[in-house]
Image (cartoon, rainbow, N blue to C red; front, top):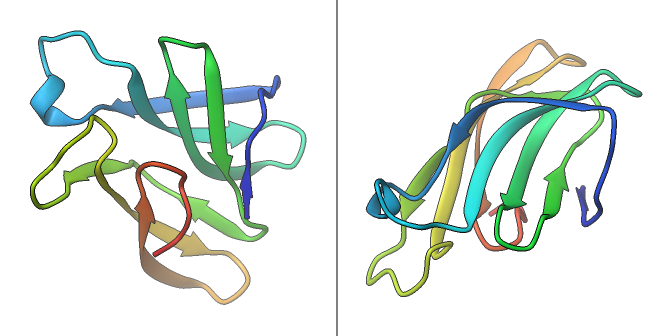
Length: 107
């Protein structure tokens, strides 16, 4: 479930950017986020240039530290994928998720 909104009540950690932009100006930062209202852990794509964000939270799923993987023939800052382990608290399974870095849709 992807939500495009600006939320309050989020704690964030593990910031990660496209490594090709290390030491350069960048707009997109990917973070692990805790929603204090639901106690869910998810991912956040924060646009530091516009101040907007996109969120991925799914009930019972708890994403860990996001890593940006550039796409082949990378053309833009967010051209790639985000990968992270995800714990499913309903089944007790550890999963590996891949999201589109542009919109945080699960691939």
